[in-house]
Structure formats: C-alpha cells, structure tokens
Length: 180
Image: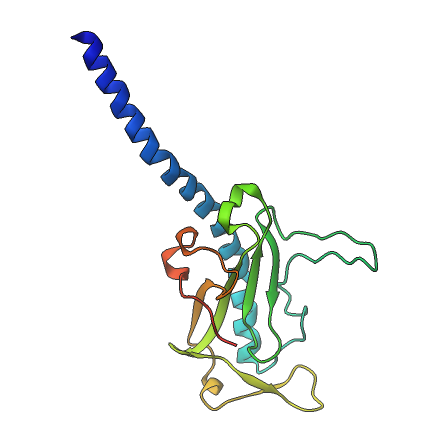
C-alpha cells in the first residue's frame, strides 16, 4: 500500500513538472525581452521632446540610439546595446520617431532571438505621426495638420515580418506594427 501511494505522489510531481517547466521557460524569456522594451522606452522621451520642438534629428542623432552593426570595410565588430538588445534605432524619414529594437541573437531568447519590436508614435489611436522634410532646412519637418498636435500615445508591438512572438511581449506591447 505504501509503495502505491509513493508511486502516485511521484506521478503527480512528474505531471506538475511537465506543465510548469515550459511555462517557466517562457517566463524567463519574457523577462529578458522586457529589457528590450526598457531600452526603447529611453528613446520615447527623446522622440517626444524633439517632435514637440518641431525638429527631427538625422538618423543616428536622436541621442538615444544604442548598438552598432559590424562594419566590414572599417573592420569593426558589431557592438550590442546590452546582452539581450543588439540595436535600438530611431527613424528619421517617413515615420519620424518610430523606434526599432532588435533583440540579440542568443539561444536563451529562443524564438525571440534576432527579432524586432517597434514603438510607433501616434497622433490618435490609429494614425502614426508622419512628416515631410522641409527643403533646405536640416532636421526640420512639416507635419500634417493632424500631426501638428503632437504625439498623443505610442503603439508598441512586434514588427509585422520578423517580429518578436507576442507570447514573449508584455500585454501592453502586442499590437503588430505594420505602419510604413
């Protein structure tokens, strides 16, 4: 009788472990992906300030970009922004202020490895901020009449192609970004 009870207890523990282990592994990846969201959030402040002042810095000059791609001509290696984040970039063209966060290529990130998260400034819940460069004035943009009010909110989520799987993203960052 005692042996049967022991076998039942061991079986129950085995079933619990089989369910809990994959859930825990997803949880640890989500924690690592949240580092990327935090890295991108630093750029949200810089973008909001620049847009309020009506100036859009050229690519790489927002003051919040992180990480660099490898330069084979100069012979320099890639520099990651952090262990989990390969690069943080800010768009300076048709969607000024759109932030792209590229996750590092690491086995511990599982399916989130080498994927992108996008943060898009919106002028209303469905319209991204768009602007047209002013001819002859570096960094100056003319925003459409809707956008002249500034950024009302941000949309955050995976890139439409090659984006981070939503199961690894926080609930507030799961809107697929297909703005172009």
